[in-house]
Image 1 (cartoon, rainbow, N blue to C red):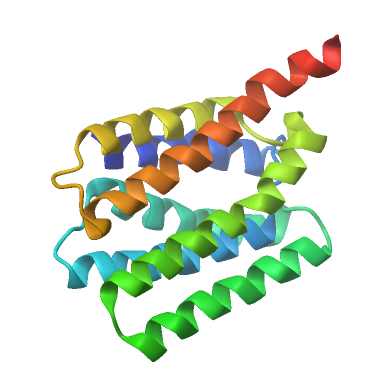
Image 2: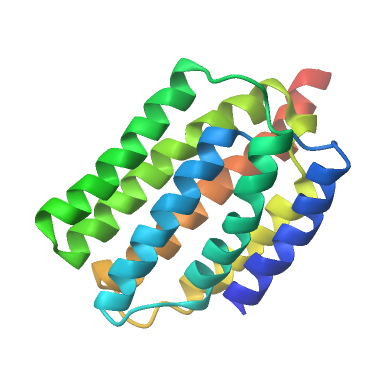
Length: 181
């Protein structure tokens, strides 16, 4: 259910990008896609793959291309820092060759890669699609409920994703109300 919901969340997000109602952060989507691949590989190695990581990787592959075309122009220092962090996560996976280390490095950098989107959404909440992020958040609830064992390999990715989605949902729903006061 979590994987299906995550994929469904990409439908309004992609439509909003194409209609130019959403301006995704290139850095976030590049980092998320690359590190979802690393995390998926680590979870495969630990035999702990869940539907959400598959849905996240598939959807982010489509979205990264659109982010490059329709996203915010230019690169901020935060975008560049996140890209360096993403490369570092991939390097650490290669150097240490331990799937758990790869998962931890991947999720750490996925979190770091979220900050350009958090900053953009905080400054311009209308640049992001509430429906998509709400569906992503619902997916996270199902993913956390479905954690088969509270091991690093099974639990870290769903827990990190729910934390990221919770921040985005807060920004998208609470921030406009804060601005209105």
